[in-house]
Every structure is written in structure tokens, then in C-alpha cells.
Length: 235
Length: 235
DNA sequence: AATGCCATGACCGCAGCCGCCATTCAGGCG
DNA sequence: CGCCTGAATGGCGGCTGCGGTCATGGCATT
Image 1 (cartoon, each protein chain N blue to C red):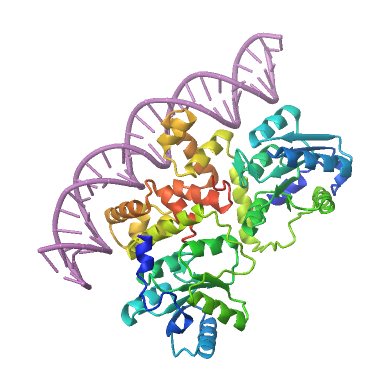
Image 2 (cartoon, rainbow over the protein chains, first blue to last red):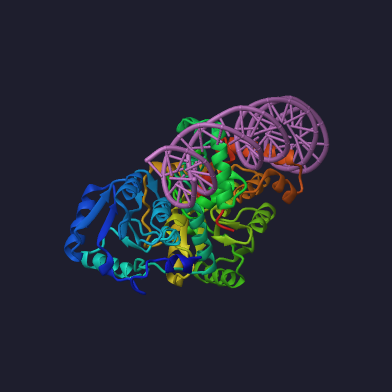
């Protein structure tokens, strides 16, 4: 499955190069960081088309309207998506586009979660311009890039299982993701139905679909699975 | 409640000293580490009474029979207790005894979890003899000792809330802890009853008691609370 | 006698599974 | 072009069984 996804990249060349990246999308709610990144990219890579979005939902909508970019830079902590949710969601729309995670938090567990979810790389917000540019170029050439201090702790099998799990979560529809998020806050079906202004019966139906997709039987298992790949961070 | 527990320390001196530590208990399933620690302690502190236990349950039983030691050194990964469970359990029996966590894993989140659960300090297994002895002495004098690279990220309020939560978990009875552990694996009541060879009705009663103690209403909330202080690590 | 832990069965509401319908969108075809 | 169709998504109510509460009792320690 993994190999197939990688080979699905349009075969303009056996090995992608950074030159192919013409249009990029930055998703970050922090305006300054957004501008700084955009400027750096324009200068260092000569990019003209740098798009930005302030939230995950805005990014999704923009991709739907304006089409797919050639690369994405994604903040870990967005107003509507903390944790791996952002990657998983964008992976649905952009199966072949390299997604770079950017964050101030360099905790090992978070990095592995992001990589397992399908990120092309993970870089620190406090990186120097040169290092940033270099990391991005390497990612756009197909390399997986992680911060220095991070050792992959690749058990192989375990990591692959988490990637498979991330793929399952990626198959959830937006509404299903909303409901799962509330489940993972410990809410009851009735509360969820009120929050989303739908009938409790509908909530249950969605939950059944979620369970089926992620291969869980009890809702507690769903919570555990979501937490195991850090789908939603504390909030 | 908190103040009472702290003041319960025998008022032999306003400020405890390392000299008061005469008898110590090491809880570790790794025989070599156990022996190495015991030897080091005997030499460096002149201790004669070094007791050992290979599992959490063995430690609990030994304390019940032989009485309380003056200090405890506790491995993070025991066969019957991974994560903060060990601290929480021993804290029940030994509210006034300094418990030192020892582990190879230096992840920040795990350290804060252990400290919030009531550990006196946290030291690495790969520490030099001098550093080890020094850290232990400082802990036994009342100081809270954490590894070098670790910054407490004390939000104060948040950390205090977690400590309060750990105290609540400490009030669980052994059987309740067993049941909570299985709940946190995503098991259904019927499965739990089978695993523990009791009636499902009994399981439910225990769960109600657990919920009441940790202030949760749905079982998913219980799972989230347990995970938030890393009561049980993956297994 | 009193307290704390464990265990049980009966009761009730919610969780999870079923079948069914409305809307939307993409594509095939007269 | 209009129409049909099928797949995907969101939505609903009913049924069964599990999850959570209550009242009760046995057993050990104090």
C-alpha cells in the first residue's frame, strides 16, 4: 500500500526535484510566521505563487476551489486542528503532495506521530533561514527530513502499523471527523448531537461508520486509537 | 486533604536529612540493575538494610508484611505496572516516604507525569555513580530532583490539577485499579468480568466507584483522565 | 459494632446496529 | 441537452444489549 501511494506520484521524472514546486500553500494562523515564511520562500526558491490559509478548514476549502498546490507547509497548532489531524485531513485531498510539518514543539512522540500520519518532514519554527530552505529542498526532492536530535526509533512493524492507522483515519468524512473529535473529548452522543445540531440517531450512525473504518468496536477503543497517533492534542 | 497528608510526616525534624534514611526498598524487575543499585547504596550511604522487590505487587505485599522503608527507588517499567501506576500505588501505602523514579526514558511528558503523581525525583539509568548518589541525597533531604535537560514547564495551575488528579487515582482500591487498567485497554465489561473471574454486575459496581472517585461520568472520560497522567503506558 | 473491600441481581437509559430516505455530484446515454 | 443512474455523504427512528445506578449482603480487619 505504501509503495503504491508513493509510486502514484505523476511520473514526470522517476525522482522528483525541488524545481517542480511552483505553487505552495502555507497553513498557519500566526500572520507574522505566515508572512515570514512566504517571503523566505519567494526569495530563496523564486516562487511566485505562495498561497496562505489561516485554518485547516480554510485550507481545505481553498484547495477545493483553487486546486492543489505543489507543496504544503502546515502548522501543528491550528485553531481548528491540533496534532496529526491536519496532516490526515490534507492527505485526503492531496495524496501526492509533500506536506511539511512546522512547530515549536520538538517532542519525539509528536514527531513520530506526524511522520506516521504521512508528513514528508518536520521542522522547527526556530530554524535558521539556511537550514529551513535546505530542509524544504530536501523534502521536495523526496527525502524524509526530521530534526537533528530525533532518532526514528523505527521498530519498523510498529511504525508501519501506525501509518496504516493514519490512512484509516484519513478515510473519515469531515462530519465523521467532527464527531470523533467530540468523542475524544469524552462527550456523550446526546451532547454531540446538541453541539452539532443534529439528532442523536444521526450521531450514532456516524459513529458506527467511524468504528467500521478504523476497525474499533467500542468507543473507548476509538479514543485509544486516535490518541495513539495523537490525532487531537489536548484542547 | 493535601496539607494534612504532608503534615503527617513525623516531626522528628522540621527539615528531613539523608541521614534519616536507614532502610530502603528497590523495586525493579531487572536483577542486574537491582544488585548494582543495592551495592552502590550500601557503599555510598553505608546502608545495611536494602530490600528489593521484582514487581509492584511484590513490593506492596512486602511493605505490608515487613513495614515501611525510609525511601523507595522505583523502576518505570515493571512487569505489572508501566507508567505512573507504580508511584500512585505506593503513595497509598507510603504517603510520607520519598519515591525516586528511575528509567532509561527521559521524555519530558513522562517526567512531568511522574512528578505530578508524587515522585520525589526522576533519574536516568545511565547516570554516573557520583551523580546518582548526589541526586538521591538531595531527594532524601526533601529536594525535588529532575534530569538536567528537563524544564518543569510549570504552569502551576495545570501541574497542580494533575497532582490533585493523581491523588484521586491513589484512592482506588487494588481491584478497582485492575478494572481501570482493563477499561483503559478498551475492553468491555463482559470481557473484564471474564478476565477477573467475577460477575459483570460486580465490574459495573467497581466502575461506578471509580467514576465517583476520579470525578468522571462516562468511561471514555475515565480513559482520558488516566492517559492524561500516563497511569498506564502502552502494553 | 463499625468500617472498608468485594461481590451480586434488578432496573433504566444510552450505546451501537439495522433499515430507510434526502441531497449532491459525476458520469453514461437517449 | 435533459435525463437517468450510482456512489458518496448526511440524516432519521426503532430495536437489542451493554453501560451505569441502586439496594443489598458476605467477609475481613479494626
